[in-house]
Image (cartoon, rainbow, N blue to C red; front, side):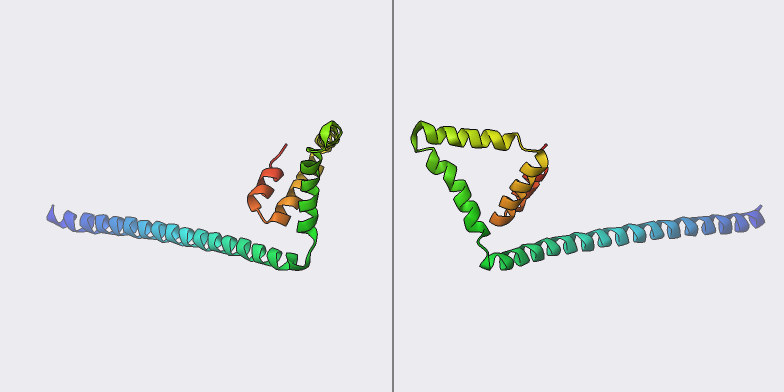
Length: 128
């Protein structure tokens, strides 16, 4: 009977060692996956920051910001020009509302990129 305990103990030991090694391998794989996800997230954040800096540098010599500022000021000024000014503004916004969604989203993206607000780009991009 004691002679049977040796092989059984050896078999149990081998099985237990196999389970431990399997668990170590799974843990190592999980750690490697988390590290890879962290690297990807870091590169994404760095890429977005680099994009913002490049966009700001490209806009230093651009009139686009001023153009959109003037464009947005026109309805504000016309709103104070009596009934005819308010009607022109209302008609203009009504016409914009009938434009295709892709045009409205593109206009929103242009304005958002000019102002440099990524959240506006996401907002106008998600508009249906």
